[in-house]
Length: 334
Image (cartoon, rainbow, N blue to C red):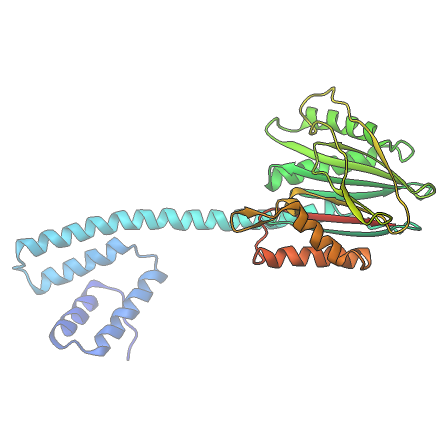
């Protein structure tokens, strides 16, 4: 069968044949007509208009009701064509935006990458998984010449590319501070001034910063409104909520941050996290902190990295593999 040519005369012949015989070949040619229309970017109202012209050529004395209904259909398809064009434009823009976000997410991973150091006497495990393509959580490790460990865990109240840019600023500000001046309260005070000057007032950042002294096994820390973690005391076999107090970063330039200390004994664990862990939801119900600790207890005997990954997989499965919020969990295991 010869290819169907896109013109009124051929359409009229096919339409007449189908009306008279209802044969399958006419339907096939109508299908070819549709494909040619798409290839030539023919709008739906143009196809309707050709159909109306062909029908009037075949039946010049159409009842006025049929004629009116065809005009009604034509006007409807004109509106449809305009809406479809707008939809296609939006889809194209969405595709371009998704591509840009994907590039930004890859850049975020590169800019915010950190390494997990080896500290004698301390087993470290860390996992951070974004709920969406961009991660609003952030963690970073810093070591000094005495093998002391600085730990930063942060959460941006606000997501997407602005959050990623804010996190990048935090990381490079942290890296700019002298390694000999890692006092947690001072670190947060300095970062607070950076955020207050450079981040939009609608965006706040919570942060925990700790300094582990490898020689004394003491963890000094301060918090800027961040989710309190937990301290597991092996001697009493109990979990305690880590004491934290402090304003989120970026509210006022003169915020100060109280510093606390934990002295870790053998087999003790410090558990740092973001609210994606403690505010895990099943349906519309938040999971109680006791349930979180029950899961942590189930896996905490494992090496730290395996333990945090097992805990993450548990809560991922619990939420049907659809995280509601970014999930970050860190174990510091003595």
